Image 1 (cartoon, one colour):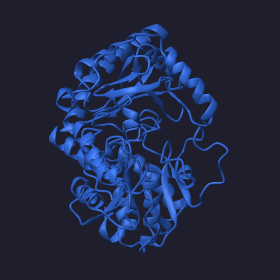
Image 2 (cartoon, one colour; image 1 turned 90 degrees about the vertical axis):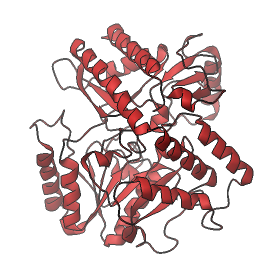
Image 3 (tube, rainbow, N blue to C red; image 1 turned 180 degrees about the vertical axis):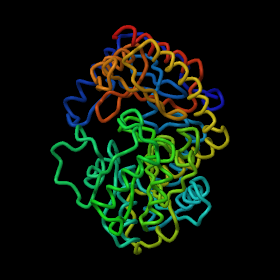
Image 4 (spheres, one colour; image 1 turned 135 degrees about the horizontal axis):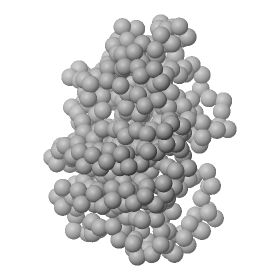
Length: 449
């Protein structure tokens, strides 16, 4: 798979440590960073990248690290997929910007045509393009409110939807995303999520949906709900996969109540979970779907795609933005989607899951602190707890992540309680690299447990 995508200049697909992590050049750059970059911008792993491709990132000291983060599920097709590189090079030589709202261009339209084809449902669709997932979510809420003439928005425990004022209100986790930044946008209401590992009553999907719906109806009122916004698999909340039946039941309630069902597929979209979109796993067809991350091979592009009657309910000029649907990002998106389709990267994601899950379950048998293993396709997580309990263990989670980093494997943490290790490899990673990364993870648990 990697050989099919890697250009001649792609870095060698190997883990290679030539200095400690971080190395001297990266430490020097971190000193410069500290002197010029806001302390409010965090860093997971303080190595500065010189090149990346396939399943590795190479830092300025020559270390080659296995990438299990993919820029937080962005470079699904790899960091420098040939089609993406060629498309961007061609577009940058033509023009870099005109603003689609001033003088439009074909690339924007072509991306919207592709989104109509690949997103769930065969209904007539429209799209609007933006720059980030937060923008997409915020605009989806705007669309739902205009279309329904209602104001209330329902979100779920453990949700993450962005860092703008409205999307901070939609997001559940306080630190680091919300603390001190209020007051937040009103008319946002939070209800319980289906979280099988932590649902003390062992609720089925239908039962968990009934619990959430009862709270909506009694505390908000169905007639006031503009939209129900949900991640089909929660991202920053800890890769929470709701019990089977939960999503269809919530979507059906929305249909009956006249509320817009919005699927936030910013992290789950574009083959990440083994389907093009996570909603497809249970046959859910969202009214609106928010997209970003994996769509454009690393360039900033986001979208809201949805039912034509909803998208067209907004007055002319009500949607847009100076950079939304930038021509370079549109070229990258078209090339990325073509790559995903040609190489069946949804199938590649399923193969990644088939490799990871048995290894992680075997590890769980030896490590009592692994409370849960969950996910779908190439979106996999393990939740760490104090052995024999469900009490979160963020300290152990951080220690395992640090050990992996020191040994040249990029892993990410997540979860409301900071106790989840999440794995999001590029969908083009080689099986040998993936297996080696799992060896390092295994050794990390042996070293710190």
